[in-house]
Length: 345
Image 1 (tube, rainbow, N blue to C red):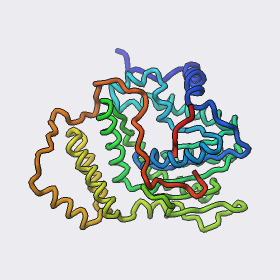
Image 2 (cartoon, rainbow, N blue to C red):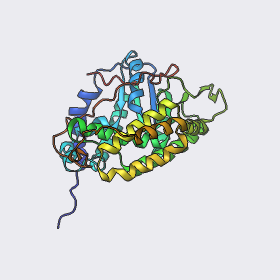
Image 3 (cartoon, rainbow, N blue to C red):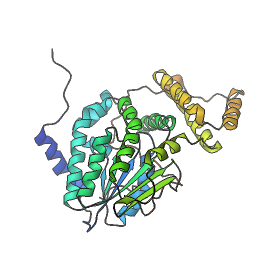
Image 4 (cartoon, rainbow, N blue to C red):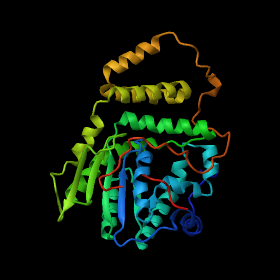
């Protein structure tokens, strides 16, 4: 009896795809810099990195362009990507992940060799590994800026499901983050913050709440020392635990109701956990008013039960790219840091 199919490419095939497809499509056409900039955008899956990356990209594109080190951008180059999305969209990342990580490493080396600006998306699932990558950028002569999103678990977990929901609505299939990796990222970011502070691995560090344009925390190196006492971990925790405004509460509850109505029964337990995590952060009066409105008689939504989402769908083949998120009108703009307008073609 044969075992599970192995989708990992041979070393030669992996390299061929990188050189013949990824380099011309995603990496070519940037300008080398005397002092390249690496912006590391740090956040757990679902935290809203895509929205902020557009702001960063606009600034880097004015400085000769950049290489976008995001494994999600290279996954569709895997020959089995479409097949896996149709067979099991939730497991696609596990099967394609090893090759996608290798392509990301090759893209990093390509950018450093050609002295290109870099936008690196990091979840810090392995804090020490991510910190070593950060140090590698500095050793290559890049100016390194770390922008971190302090987003509570309830919002990021909801963000993962909402992205999946919208992708399925758009093209019949979607991508879910691996739960174990989400958990590792949420705790790993704090460990990463400790390492960056202790080893002074970045020229600047900033922490933003989702949707805010000004950092809640910023620190810079001057002559090899932090200008202010380093509190990266503390700033992350404070941003995550900041009580929500009435508008933030209403936005969360609106999305939560949409997902409860539109997603299948297999997602309801997860949505319950998200609601529990959100309770300490909700604006109480706003939440109470929202619940009163929900309890009032309302006209039927007209959503048929048959239209509820299932975890695996195969109505259409994916186009190979995720539906782009709309930029937030208040997306973060770093203090002389830099959102992704997308790779130049």
